Image (cartoon, rainbow, N blue to C red; front, side, top):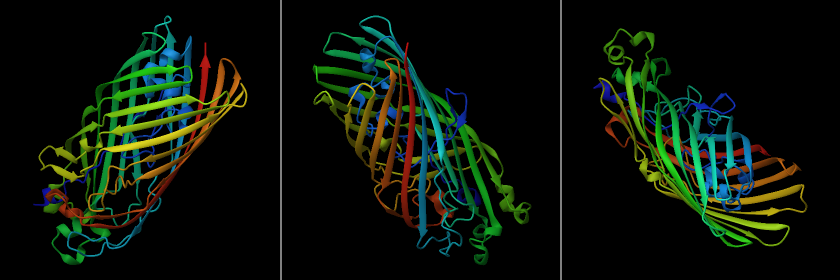
Length: 446
């Protein structure tokens, strides 16, 4: 039936971000694997996210709340990241549901340049107890292909935005062991859209893939979910620290609307009658993560950092949209859990300047062309990071950082893996993706 043929293809993406600065900003893509945003501070960005055990500033709330035990007085950090992705698709043999070559462009640069803020505040109550709060973007992704691209029946635009409010507390048992914990209140907002091959639905082979007979479906929704995070920091000696941190999965049930656009020549037909706007829901569970990291002061000028982070991306095995009066629309994803390995170095020639360098290898949860999704065309990546801090005085500093992320060239050969995907046809082609992320951060101690 037409109803099942045109249920939507789905992908998680879109999150309304209400930044601390009071702006609504879109989340960027093509930085960290899956739909992780990738960085929550410019200071740690400079060492490719390997510096959690160093405890550079109040952004430790995100990386390891136990790190607050090393911060004196009251401290604030405000961060702005700008992500500039470059994503290109090259078609090889994309076809409609009838096996006819789908006409259209390669989709242009589907990455979206985005600016995203984060902010943190910590306060020392006494020598043992610290409290703090962070507001940051843990997940975010945005792809936007040209309207007439060859893969339009699988995706046009896909966006995920999140905003996480994270009150936290830390307790220092002694000079060796500190622990921390936090609660997360996470807002998520998503948008998915794709073209509908209504020419094929007419059962006239000559109209299959004809742009004049394309419709469109768009799903939007949002939700608030709750989670927690834990951390511990161990001072091995004066020069060496090791930290561990865990951030829980968060369950969401996005509620919103499914809306259709139908070309004028089909609005009075049975096809048009079957495509009526309705309410829709989408279950999303953002993944848990576990990190272990280390810091070692080699000498007065040089320090080394390292981090390993595991992420439970396998929770994302399908995207299932439930719409009132329609059969479920299911996109099979079958993502795998991932690991990220990062190392960094900090050079501090004097009390005014610090220079940072970092390198990371980040695994992709998408492992093969048959299950890759065009809305999140992911692959293994390498991060090259450079950053620095300038101390105006002992209470004020600024961090600047840049990361170049190069994804391994990949291909896609996505055929329907569920009956509800049948009308989307097949996408076959190659992806070349990279991005540059700039970070700026201001730190103040009261």
